[in-house]
Length: 239
Image (cartoon, rainbow, N blue to C red; front, side, top):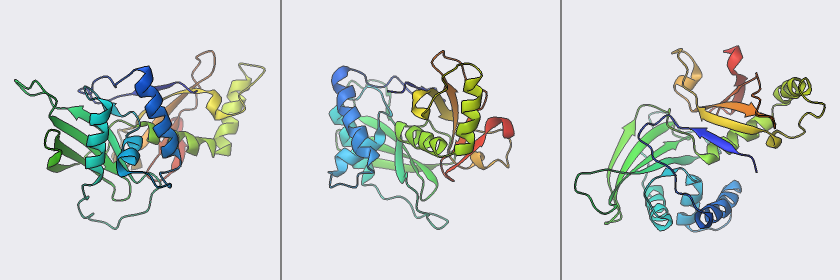
């Protein structure tokens, strides 16, 4: 299993829930999500699978399922431009417990989502005790942390880029007599990419900057930038 190190740019996010039992359940849900929930599954299961271990500090597994299922039923505002079809659809990026003074129980929850079809980001505020969304607001920035579904999608796009794979294998061959065969043999670090240049497509579209490592923990010089929205791959050095 490839080890993933997800670089998080949101300073207020907490640690994700861990533990063998929870990890095992979420692993099975990730497998279901890999088939894009094409089988007849309850909405709650598909919604939680799409969360895919996104940040959900301080919430139990059942609370995560409740939040994800409720958030998935909230209609998106009408897009200013025509919606486009996209394999990633709407993604829940993170679920955060609001820290409020004198709040003893888990009640107010922030849910951050991105809709690839509508190309919009939103924040839902949920009252967990009432199981109701009390506020919805749009977010201008697209540069929220990646979730596992997006990272897997980025890796699949890299795996389809034969020219890039050849470049990586050539570099690897200079370090080892046995270069990798599959991209899945490598470790990776993926983070949301926010370019400095205003005209760069990734200023307004969700992109992943991917650093790849071999078995010796040596980073490859070629660092792919995967435009998740446009489903294209370029190199950081070429920007």
